[in-house]
Length: 222
Image 1 (cartoon, helix red, strand yellow):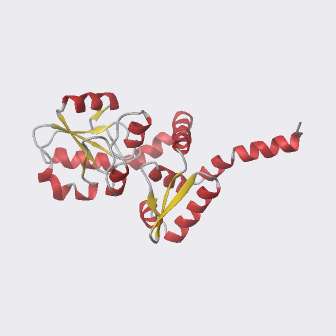
Image 2: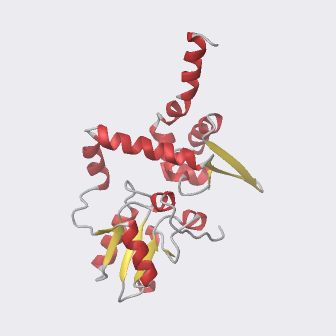
Image 3: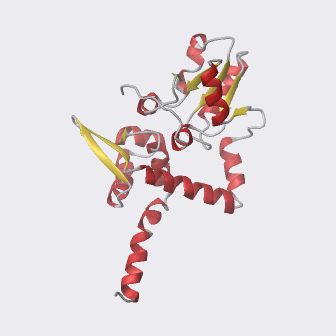
């Protein structure tokens, strides 16, 4: 039976994953990778870091066993090592939301005032999809849509919403969704759509939460 040193080493190893996530940029990478695999160049653009810095953060995630890679030609794609990594990130986020009092102010400063936005729950959206009386827009970047999306959702990245308004079916309520509770893509899309006279709401959270709840998803070619 081991002694205190072995016990200390065990607990140090157990918290290594938490130590790696104790960096905002790496947490952002996990948040993006929860949507699906991406290349280092794409990830660098998403977190607004240089490719070199992003690569260093990804190497830390790889060494900690939180991420994995696959090669396609000359390009390497990164993904989360398992659904457990996404669950770890979600649990960390929910714990911070519940106990870090100053987080509310930071969230409001980032996402803005959502008082003017109507929302729909996952269960409500699932029912509406079965009834066929709703149009769903995935406003995330197209690679994330390809990696997985809500069945029947149309891929209309936020950057394209203004130019593709004519493609959005009229006469039905529109539900926009993106990456999760801290993603503002759906907020901006709903404001653009309602400003054009359409009836639009945002999904209360995002695609990772939909997937984690075991609800149906679809994939398409990257």
